[in-house]
Structure formats: structure tokens, C-alpha cells
Image 1 (cartoon, rainbow over the protein chains, first blue to last red):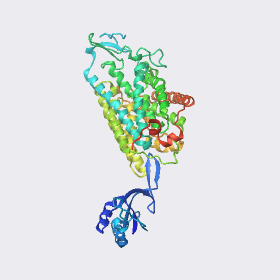
Image 2 (cartoon, each protein chain N blue to C red):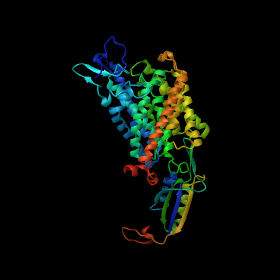
Image 3 (spheres, rainbow over the protein chains, first blue to last red):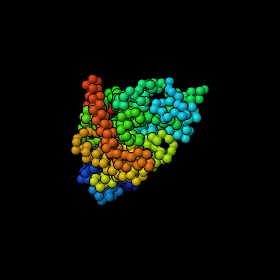
Image 4 (cartoon, chains in turn blue, green):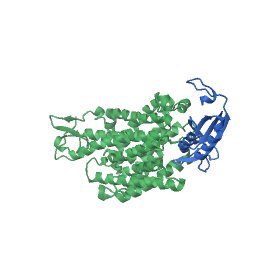
Length: 112
Length: 426
């Protein structure tokens, strides 16, 4: 099992949700986050006072999947989240040691 | 008790009793409306204008300042303020008399069919004139809050505003507006309060941000406005309410009120555009905060001139004020290094000075019956700057030494909403 974490442009969230649902993903956790990468921040000016906003608003999604689905999900996220501009985001994949469904106590792949 | 004003007597110089038939219902209706409009400028207009500009942790404290000032100045006005500002006193250089303390003698007598009128507005009930002037006495100290936002103790603010209202606002209103006041006698023109309200509030703001010092973290930490929607709504309410402020200052529903209203609208638009283009050219983008600030600068600058000038000078007054206040709030503030949090000095004092001096340039005899003189106007501007700054500075210093003026650094970091009022918005 793998945990796929992706950082997205916020307005791409709905497209990504649809794309991963199509390849069989059953659940996604979404968090609003801020951060910086190569996109850097932007400048805001209020009555002449300049504020550099270093952390750009982003959306983070987390998806737990069986190993067999990993490549398809990565493909789906990459395609649906891409605009071709700097700041499109990143995908991180890590091994997932265990998954538990709280309601039934199921463990492993069947709990995803 | 007031004297009765007989039909053949000369114009009164003190409040007098008149018969019901002396009251003009058109004038009275407009002035009743103006009272409501000008009160609307402070609550919620100014409260929202300022409330949107502060950080989220201070929004309730900022709204609270406007609201509490409204209440406390009302009580002081009843007690002392109206009498000191708008009745003749023993000397033109001091305050007015004590005859209207507790609004004593301001009457409406149903059976005798008589009521009192102020000598400053003989066609409307004195009650209406007194309430109209109260709304000016309210907004003036509320404007100062723009300079001391985010860091003054609430208790100290109440003490400061109370003393300031009585020993700074009342004397200056008396000198400029009460016909026996020495600046009125000199011929200083201030139709609706460019000097009495705006220069006065702005210079007190400068004194307060100098005595208080900068906000913790200023200018290193970013302190962007938390909700410019509130600010734009507030600026819009100020604009609408200002028709009561300026056109109401005719104290009549007449042609001069109409001209005051027209020039108010035109100057405001010119100033908003002036600020917007100045910012667009120098900083790259036309901002919402910029156009709203420019509108307020224009309203301030046309205030002394409305009632004295025509539409074309209004465009000039507005445009100059928009650009000058933009420069004051951006370049002057950063060059001199004081922390005028919401630019009460930069907008109200600078805009007020621009308006007062240009009133001297553009005042039209055809409209007002009096020619302006920049030299005479300088007396009003200079007196207000010197008296207002020094007395405000002393009051603030004394409060600072005796009860402390500023919240602790910890309270300031936490935000005034929680630390002073035990509430917050989420």
C-alpha cells in the first residue's frame, strides 16, 4: 500500500477529484495549506506599504491506494492538475505500513 | 430661561424663544435627516472603514472605539459640550458660556406654543441644531482612532477622548463657528468642519501616534488589512452620510445646501480618481483601499469649501487632495517613520489643510456673500495645528504617566479583542 500526497493549485481540486475517482479511488482527504516552491510568493501593497506574501495558498490531497493502483493515480493527478505553468505542484509517494477502518476493525487492503 | 425674540428685533446672538410659526418645516425636515446621516458616518460608517483595515485580532476593539466614543461624547454634549461650543462666552478666546449646561433652557413648550432656536439656525428647533452639532462632536474624536488603532488601552482611550472633547474640540468649534469666537470674527471660513473636525482630528492623531510609539513589529511584520470589503462599505457609508455633513451645514433646505451637495459629490469623485491614478502610476496597480481612501480624502477637503465654491473649483480641490493625501499616507509616513496606523493624520489633517487653504483661493462671493483669503484661512489652520497638537500631546502624556496609555506587549500580540474585551470574531 502507498500513501500518495499531492500539492495542487486550489482551483484544480475538482478536476483532480474527478480524475482519481475515474481510476477507482474511493476516498480523498483535502487540506488547505500554504507553502513556497519555485513559484515563490507575490507582493501586496496597502497605502504604499509593500508586503511580500512568501507562502502561496495551495491544496493538499492525501490518497491511500493499493500498490496496483499507484501508477494510474499518479498519472490521473498529473494530467488533471497540470497547467504547464510554474506552481502546478508536486506528488509524493510513501510506503504505507497499515490501514484500519475504524467502524469494522478491518485492516490492510480491504480497509482502503 | 431664554429671552423671547420679538418680530422686529435684530438677529439674535444667543439662543432665543420663538413661536412655533417661526419654524420652517422644510429646513427642519432636512436637518432631522442630516442628523441621521451624520451619525451614520460614525456608526457604522467609520467603524467599518477602520474595522476592515486592522488585523482580524483587533476588529472588535476598533468597532468598539467608534461605538463607545459615540456614547460618551453624547453624554458630555448634554452635560457641558454644547454649551461650551455654541453659546457666547465671557471671552472670544475661551469657550462658550455655561447657560446650556445639561441642556438647561433648551425647551419645547406645547401650551405656550413656543420653543427655543439657536442663533446659528433660527428656522429649526434648537433640539435639532444641538443634535446635528453633536454628530460632528462624535465623529471628530472617533477619527483620531485611526492613528492610535491596535495599541491604546480602552480605559485610557475613554479618558483621553472625554478630556479632548471638552478642552480641544469645544474651544476650536467655538472659535471657528460661534459668531463671537475669535476665528469667526477674523473671517476664517469653515463651512462644515475642515478645520474644526478634520485638521483637528488629524493633528491629534499625529500626537497620539507619537506619544504611543509604533505598533509592535511595525514596520517589519506585515500588517495587511483583514477585510477590505468592510472598508469599502464603510467608505461608501461615509460618502453618503457626508451629504448630511456638508449640505446639512447650510442649516436650511435651500440652494446653498444644494450647491454644497453637488460640490461634495464632484470633489469626492475627483479625489478618488486622483488617488487611484497616482497609485496606479507609481505602484503599478489601482487598489480598492486606494480608491476608497481617495474618496475620503476628497470628502475631507471639500468639507470647508462646500457652501463657498462652485463645481469647477471642486474638481481642483478633490484632485489636489487625492494626490496630496496619497503622498502623505505613503511617502511622508515612511520618510518620517511615525506609525499612523490607519492614516488619520495623512488623510484628515493633510486633506483638511488642502481644503482649508483652497477654500481661501476659490471661495465665491456669488455663492456665499464672502470672499476667501488664504491668509485668513492660515489663521484657522495654524491655530488648530498648534493648539490641537500641543494640548493633545499634553493630555496623552499625563495619561501615560498616571494610568498608562498603552496595552502590554503581550496584550498587543494576542490582539485587543481578546485581551481588552474578552471576545473575538472567527
